[in-house]
Length: 241
Image 1 (spheres, rainbow, N blue to C red):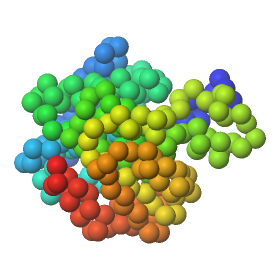
Image 2: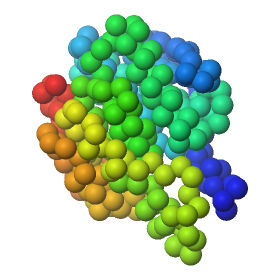
Image 3: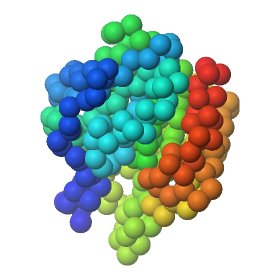
Image 4: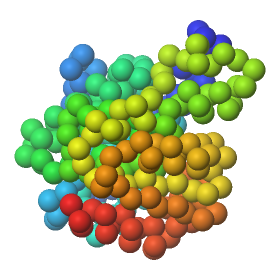
């Protein structure tokens, strides 16, 4: 289990369809030379959402989720971590943090300075760490956990997960170091990362912060279950920035 744990934690999708019209397919490098792929969907507003997705799939899977926010005018940058979606390398916690730094540096190199990091599940840990290393205008954590150690203990209660786990993503320990408004979103019926784990991450964050609970939503269907009200709340959070 110790040797194979990353195969149980990361499930990268590798083959990404070509992006639709208006979406730019970009390549850039992390500080350790890993080549990363991303979709950039520019918008007329001065805020760009930088999406750090969960532990499975690739950037193309998230386009439909981000589309309503893009329609409202927000720019969207969907980055694939190392080992995902055509990016080189293999995923590790420290490697994904370098990928977060590289995404922020790439966008700022293009003159995009007002960034909001949007983490999904495991990606919340990346978003939080990136907000510490590369301060942002805002931070959104959806279906996140205070630490993935707690998630691992729940999945494998018969193992000493606290001793064995390499990639821990202790977001609650790092989020107090961020200096931006925070929005945490969670589904009440999340069976993968129960809502109390998401609430623990929210409780650790500094003010100003906001909590959005989506009744009846699980881990991967928050935007679908939340519908228009979900997008209105995210839009309102972004407008305040």
